Amino acid sequence: MDKPSNVRVVGFPISQYDKEWLDTLNDEELSETACADGFTLIYGNLKEFQEALNLSCGVDIVSDYWIYFLTDLA
Image (cartoon, helix red, strand yellow):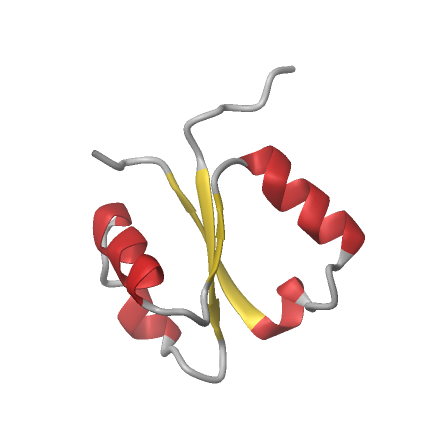
């Protein structure tokens, strides 16, 4: 099965972001917030996220970041 190519994955540091607030934002707002902050993780597609997750890249993505999958981007 092919993975959608239009999914951007962003991770917001748990120590710096309130999940309840993030949940009120739409995909465009989440993307803008992530791009404006140098501490977020941004992956252009699912393949990049998968590789980072599998390699760990020195970052514990699962326990240190709120992860959002964004599709409704202009």
